[in-house]
Length: 199
Ligand SMILES: NC(=O)c1ccc[n+]([C@@H]2O[C@H](COP(=O)([O-])OP(=O)(O)OC[C@H]3O[C@@H](n4cnc5c(N)ncnc54)[C@H](OP(=O)(O)O)[C@@H]3O)[C@@H](O)[C@H]2O)c1
Image (cartoon, rainbow, N blue to C red; front, side, top):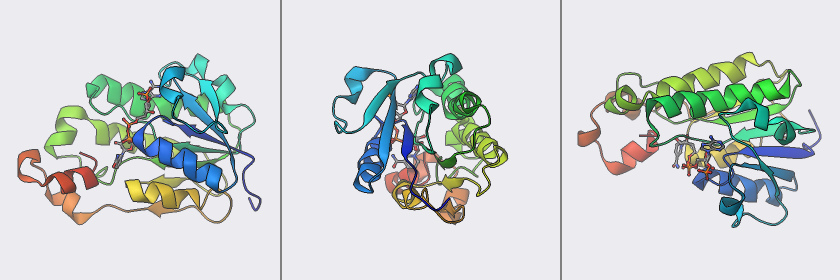
């Protein structure tokens, strides 16, 4: 794809990453559609961003969100919601949006977490978030856009990932950080490392 996408859907638009993505996408001249589950929480989003209400756990609410889009930036997360929410939101959200797309080809950037390959850490054992995010990555890889998806595993990389929505090859940004592999005990790791590793 050479031209900039006409409409970018931001999933998780009201979150701390999603808000930055909405602002950056508008700054780059894209039309932005923000998926929100509660319009009240979208009050702080820029007026230029179109709000569409939908719940990632309910596929039947997502048709309007994907109508006519050229690209999706997934920045949703279930953080704090427990194992069931990790499955239903982190993974289920990706699955349901792709289902709503019905095989139409769009550019996809998926934000997961820098520690997503860490299966044995205490954080993943208690939440299974990394496991479900990894499965979400597999879904978008298998969804088959010709150029492949952009997989983004760190907060700063989310912003960089936007640059690749309009053109160019797929990127896997912020690959696994060796520190995330070795820090398995949440109580012994620094808060900055935990944040960096998505814990
Ligand atoms: N923040 C970081 O530094 C960082 C670093 C690495 C990776 N990550 C990962 O990136 C993702 C986003 O991080 P964040 O800090 O932006 O998270 P956040 O502030 O908690 O935002 C999560 C977003 O997901 C939305 N969401 C949750 N469940 C939903 C549902 N059922 N239907 C529709 N939307 C739903 C939330 O909507 P509501 O506003 O309605 O709740 C919100 O917009 C997370 O998965 C996190 O693990 C974050």
